[in-house]
Length: 418
Length: 222
Ligand SMILES: Nc1nc2c(ncn2[C@@H]2O[C@H](COP(=O)(O)OP(=O)(O)O)[C@@H](O)[C@H]2O)c(=O)[nH]1
Ligand SMILES: [Mg+2]
Image 1: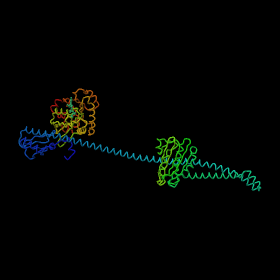
Image 2 (image 1 turned 60 degrees about the vertical axis):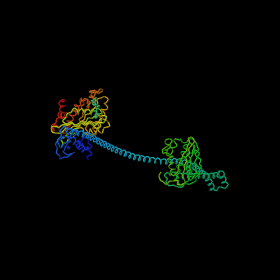
Image 3 (image 1 turned 180 degrees about the vertical axis):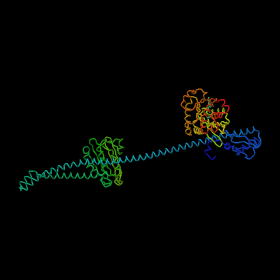
Image 4 (image 1 turned 90 degrees about the vertical axis):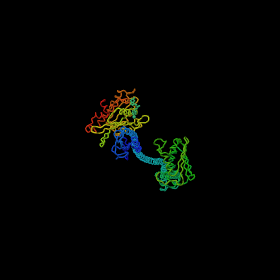
């Protein structure tokens, strides 16, 4: 009975004790006593007394059957007519059978419940196992996604640097042009000046040979040496100007080529704009008239080369937006402690569907090979690093205006990498 | 497997009538209870609901003694056929020594028969019975009804199967004993192999069957 397993096995043979389970034995025995008009005892098939007395003497006895075999005996202590004894035993068997039905039912019920429960538990374990598998899978997936993201970010960073390099390259090409121009006229000026010297050497030979002052004056005037002298001065002055221009360009270029600059310095945006215009003018002078309206004049703590990239990038976009010829206005001002830089063109404009994406990496409307689509992304990142914002408004056919706001205070977060 | 109890000299053999709901399993047992006259025959225990559907199982206990004194006890069960009682079917089927599959011969019942047979195979596997080795007899019942599959159709369908196919009408008792005898023959073979009924207990197949069916029957039906 303590054994759950055997308790619930509906196939086990029930002994008499079990068959009497739940039956009020004293009432049963007193009923039998009255019916048979004697004292009765009930023994099981091992001889153990279940009801009544073990040691009392037995006069008559009749077997009680379980489902097939005898499971015990009904015994009387005095003689009883055999048919009455059989009738009493029969009645008892009816009671036992009823009880057996109940016991069988509850046993198989218990057994199937237990089996179902075990089955459920097995399924639960299986489910948990598969859940664990999926969890592992999703975890390893997460790791792989993270790795992929890292790879992509690396590639992104490389492209990003390439874009910065490329813009420096474009700048350099412009600069070469810018330098070639004064170089050309300086060279021709100097050549002309050198050719003038011939005439003065000849005049000097006359002096050495002891020519008279009259003769000398005649030659001085006749060869138009005073004119040459004035022209010589002009040529040299013009060349000096050209050299100054080259020197400025070189200084500006030196500034803007520092793309990995991390240290900050005090610089004002007006100077940066002017320098960029100086070194890159040849890139737009065919297409666009540049109108500068610079009045910020407030130096800010910044990475000037980086801001130069921004100005150069925005200017480049403005030039590209112009189909044939147009006007580009660059305005600077200070409003409420914010340096404002506006680059406005009257080019083709950006459509509403494209506009929200222009700061996204790799987004480009230019032909393949024309741009990586990182230009505005780079600008955006640099401005953000300076604690500023960049906004863009545009109208198809009318043009585009990009506004950069840079706070004067705390203009740069002193973080290294973006 | 049959349960051999050394101390009380008893071999308990479990037989199960399996099949779809209402195919006639309980009726088979009722007829067996009516007809069989072994030395020991218990009462037929029928556990059914108010609408005559078998709730848990039916049980018919039978028995006789072998010449050696060994008590051969049969417990013949039916399973509940309704789909929802699958746990009970499994519990009753477990450790079975032989199975009668009671199919309903009516044409409309072919699908139910098929599903129930598959369920038998599946449950046999679940309770660890070797379905290929299990003594099994297929009985097509209700031959008295119209709109039934012909014997030829049925035999053709079961041609490839290794199990004997019998026909019956449980209502009248037709074919009930033949089915039971066919099963007993197969069951004897496995029990003899395991418990040496012939050599240790002096019990051959013919007397095994004759004693199970009971004196009058064995001589009358041979
Ligand atoms: N006509 C006919 N009816 C039968 C036969 N065997 C059983 N039935 C009837 O079919 C119904 C179901 O029988 P039952 O033995 O309870 O089916 P079980 O669900 O397999 O136990 C009852 O009404 C039976 O009287 C048969 O051979 N012929
Ligand atoms: Mg039934």
